[in-house]
Length: 496
Image 1 (cartoon, rainbow, N blue to C red):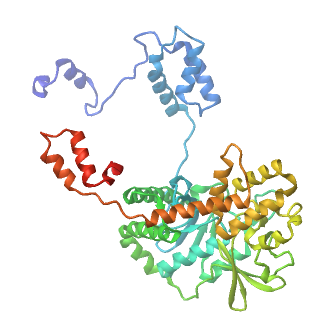
Image 2 (image 1 turned 180 degrees about the horizontal axis):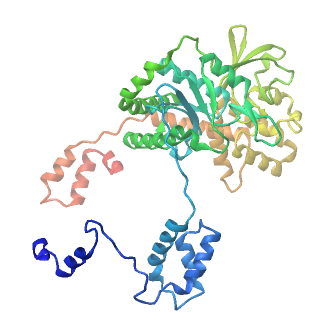
Image 3 (image 1 turned 180 degrees about the vertical axis):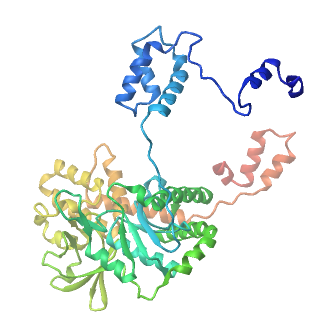
């Protein structure tokens, strides 16, 4: 009767009535097999290998063991093996990484880090822009800001913090970063103990920030910023696709594009950002300069030394004592308040940055100095120039130096890229003649061709020929229509 009323079989009803507590399910685990274990030949070996190396993947382990049991183990048993390995890991496997959810307070921390942008292939007028982003995040609201940077340097930190705090208008309590050389340095030979850099501490003190760093090799401790790198890059990639091009006319245009991307992202976070701003202190400090200043003296070799790097300068500055204002990507030389030169900042921390334009006029008068010049290799602006000099050494070793210096003089006068293109054209010939005269001849020919092209009248095509094509579609064939078009406008033949 119970089975009939419940709509179940009599056997099921009998089982429930025999239970002491019919509301509890009491499944009986099966301890017997209904068929021979298909993995019996390899499972014991698999267990011993998994216990020795728990990180082994099931597929790799199955393929390894199946090689020694051909004919016994079918490839179709892979899924069965994977399920059994998973069941073993649930019972006896090693513990997994635990992520401890943190309670984040509004306005408490500003997390900063740098991320490389090579994967997005941003270019400026066709040349790929090698750069990073200084990326700052407020963990509570996920508000973020980013500034283009050349490297993970104190100067980029200065410029980045200046932009972030100017955008916020307020200052959080702490600044969180990793243990990079920008913030810390080694205190002992073991490399385990690190201390804050004096300049980093001065930056934090200027803005009233409490410096904090994560532990060495523990990027997850700065996870709010580390994970935001990927989200920001995906957002930029999507905006690039919508834009239709990854190439920009100038770095300024790219910076404005970045600002637009960041503003659109932050527009979705205004609610929680307001909570953060409400508890932050107002900026009552002056802006921190995003440059470093050093006094330098120009030597008689027309160079200056900044820390461990040598830079060439115009010869008119020899003997002068100047103020070098070092930005993240350039150096401004000042005499009093007047700017007298601007140099490109070297990417390394040692070596030399020699601009041939500063020296070529004097080297032309003293060609013998080129052979043993201390920074001679810096006078080859690109591999093409080096290939041209090597050809000159093979063909005319006695005059190679003078001839190459004359080519460099043309590059200083006409432009490095134009001369490089001309040298490529010359070296592509079966019997190249590398000389300043030949380079000037090619550049003059190219200028004449460009002038002729610019003076050429625009092509005018009469649309009446297309009307004739439609009107005579039935009576005229294609050849007749083309003859008619040519008769009306001779340039149509060229256009076709």
